[in-house]
Amino acid sequence: MIVILRQNPDKTQLRGLMTWLESKGISVHTTVGAQQTILGLVGDTSQLDIDLISALDIVESVRRVQEPYKSANRKFHPQDSVIDVGGVKIGGGNVVKIAGPGAVESSEQICSLALTLKGAGADILWGGAFKSRTSPYSFQGLRAEGLGFLKEAKTASGLPLAAEIAESSQIDLFDGVDMLIVGGRNMRNYELLRALGKSSKPVLLKRAVSATYEELLMSAEYIMSSGNPNVVLCERGIRTFEPHTAFTMDISAAPVLKTLSHLPVMFDPSNASGKYDLVEPLALAAVAAGADGIIVTVHADPAHAMCDGPLSVKPDRFRGICEKIKTIKGR
Image 1: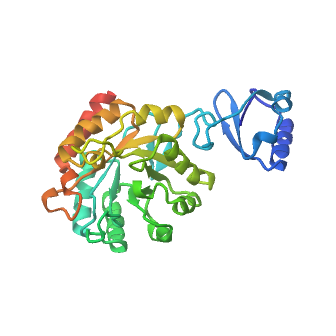
Image 2 (image 1 turned 60 degrees about the vertical axis):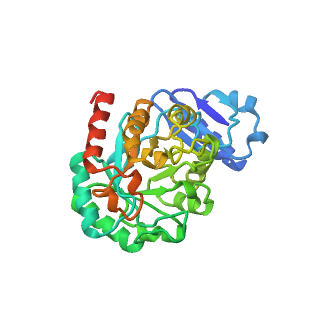
């Protein structure tokens, strides 16, 4: 349920309404906009009398919300959210470019690449330290050591740092990381999502390959309902009947999710396609469709990458993508 207040509501009446709602076991999320204030009511609102609330002088209207996700719902928060990642703003008309290797291989590799990416147009550095792989025999990442190399690259380049977290027990290792990435395999790892909700760090939440829009938003709800509003949604491709690409990038995710939610939406064209030569057109299509940014896998020598070589673009191609994005956005 949402309660839309009249402009400049009487503070005494508002405090009385809030106290009464909380006494009924209802959590109240307040959104203050330029024109109106909205109270998002979360809990068992079936017991509340809409007519009674509507009769209050400070109340303009009351609406019931059918969707199960509340904090992520645009009806609760009409204005677009803008998420700050180490000084980089995701949302609000910006197109943020996150770039880095699928796996960190050495300190020299990631520090050198970070400096190159900054010059090419990257806004945020990322790299894989903990790798969730389909096969237990595949390279699993350098883990804590790799995370240390990423932090060195952050210091060397001055770029904010994003890195993927695999389980809640790892959270303390990510001190110094500006954004935590939840991979598609972990979109339904609810214990991890709850733990991330107790942190203030921004979270990039990737859509699972078989997840609906509502399921993605419900996973975001796990994080937000636990206290962390700093969530960015990410489309990384869904599984369809088409085998030519690794997955099918759902371009409609940008307009649909932006209709349903106030959260920023990014795209991962690298993992969606699985092919380096498709990354650029998919990235540009995502931006044209309204994406708030892209996350691209970049490697200086893809042929010898320890993982994700086939989907990695070289730094020069990434630079070209950044230049073409400026053309699409007109700046």
